Amino acid sequence: MKPLLEIRDVSLSYHTSAGETPALSHLTFDLMPGEFLAVVGPSGCGKSTLLNLICGLLSAEEGTILMNDTVPSPGDPRIGYMLQKDHLLEWRTIYQNVTLGLEIRRELTHAKLEYIEEMLCTYGLDKFRNARPSQLSGGMRQRAALIRTLALKPELLLLDEPFSALDYQTRLNVSDDIGRILKKEGKPAILVTHDISEAISMADRVIILTKRPATVARIVTIDLGLTDRTPLSSRNAPQFKSYFNLIWKELNQYV
Ligand code: ADP
Ligand code: MG
Image 1 (cartoon, rainbow, N blue to C red):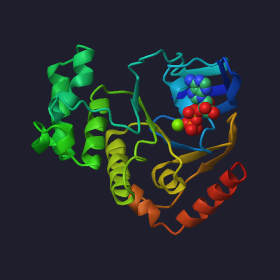
Image 2 (tube, rainbow, N blue to C red):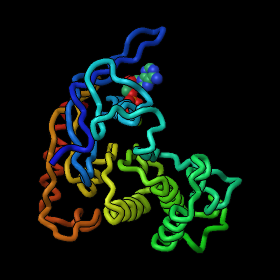
Image 3 (cartoon, helix red, strand yellow):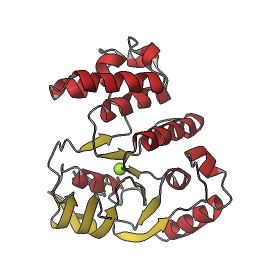
Image 4 (spheres, rainbow, N blue to C red):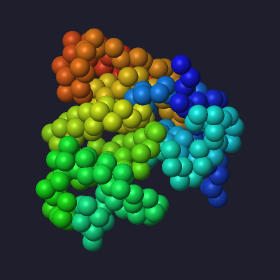
């Protein structure tokens, strides 16, 4: 099978008046169609930089990034991006928020609005369509942000620590929620997180980065032997702890 995304020998430094900051160094990995990858690494190692490169906001100084054989461009419609902050607009209702992306792209077609309608119902937000973001819980807000992103039918989702602003209990529920939604919609995704448990519970493979300038230290394939795997059931799998220890040990070398 051909990878959806190929990252080959990518390096990038930031150049500022204070000097040069090498952020990524000779990074190589693939993402297969339908795959969920998690990226973990020490704070400040270059994880957000990596996502900004993949979505075309930054360009690599060395190496290549190809999605289905073409280089992603800034605002590439094939890629959806979710951040720690949900960036919902308070002056718009939830419905006006989830349709915002389509409105900006002038793609408010019948079929796309129907898809939004379906997701609002399936994911429990239809009763809140006229509410303002501040009336929703943190978890519901993230769900709304995800629906807004999925409405654009991206082929790949990038998630940059999307749960880290939530309290622990909410975070478990929301990551379970989002994990199920992405699986149901069949979306490949790259999740950046500093939470090892979150990475193992959601990902097919975990990419461990070294400290800055980041390169791939190790790639761990997660096989928990579960048929109907969800983030919460993954956490209860007997092998979960050994994956945790393995990744924790590897990461600890770089802290
Ligand atoms: P992470 O997401 O892993 O915490 P980042 O990718 O945000 O790390 O940043 C990697 C390194 O690059 C950090 O040392 C950060 O200070 C530096 N950096 C990030 N963005 C810029 C920028 N726009 N200009 C200069 N340095 C930057
Ligand atoms: Mg970051």
